Length: 476
Ligand code: IDC
Image (tube, rainbow, N blue to C red; front, side, top):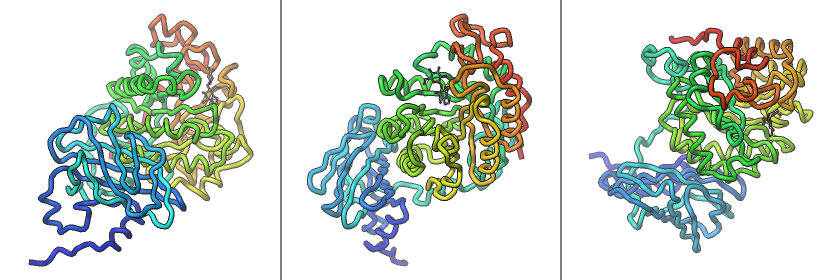
């Protein structure tokens, strides 16, 4: 019998340096014992930089179901400290750390997994922790598969022909391919749809009848779910807003539409202000919606007054939280100057090309308001689109205030450009707000009829005409 090679400490550290490290049988025991072990298995992934790191820990329960758990582990060096965490409550004494479940992830059935994470600091070296335990039982199990394919690997077999005709039935799980958004057949597509207004103000605009009209009368591909964080939004009731978002994800899915989950930061413009909230929110929605094919994550709406490097740092902390639960979902990152690729603050997309977010399967947001943003913005989008995957997650036919008259010429120029470049878009807003950007006349939502043109504003009429033209999704 060929002896199983025993991994050395050095290979363990080398694996740690490239990112994902599976602590199977704490990687130091012969493989045969790892297979025999039960209890739990832990995967520890860390992204580190000088002095700091973000860790993601996936816990798999291989034993009896538990209701409430404590994960224990030890840092190999005294210089490693847990800082801000999410999806668990952390305590550290010396090098020993415990992480206790929070209320939504305490139940772990046999074979179930959950992901938690934290930001930490280190001095000297930052090796992966050892001696993981779950409720006191050593986690010597193996997390399978041990060779998870990278998220950008194209499907190895051609998917079968679609069995339905909705956008999600035809296109399936999306992924970024080059500078495009591609469908399950690996072909570039454009999604066209509408954004909700702030859920805290316009919940009455999204009953079933409204989503039926969006799917069947407007024939939209996409619903952007705009969850403000401030302005009486998420921060006032995290569980309530998370539920509202999930409900709309389900309603979009039931009608075959994609759902873009918009963490609608706006003021303050520094996404870092909401970093902890973002981690908590995205840990929950990505765990809950991981199996769905229709979910796209937009991690920050419109960063403003901050550098690209700050936005990038935010993205590189939030994306791993999503990936830990939903590894194949597309994630969209906001850009500098209210998602203008930097243009509204005197920059351009070169800063992103020079320092892209270090993650696969991501796109960059571009926003415009047609009556305010014209040729110089269009020129930059056309230039950037050759180098970066772009998604217009929000735009208006009016001025950037969200009000005023439709600028038909500029809106048409914009949408013709986006169609030609196959850049997906969502229009602000599918609501009856008393402002020019709203698609419905004031009072429509409480009246409860959404289909047809009689309930629409000029912006609504214009957008419905653009969106309801036939899609052209390749299926082979
Ligand atoms: C606007 C709404 C308006 C609301 C305001 C408050 O239309 O009713 O009072 O937000 O925050 C954006 C933002 C989006 C803005 C929109 C129009 O993403 O939240 O909505 N806009 O001003 N960026 C550029 C324009």
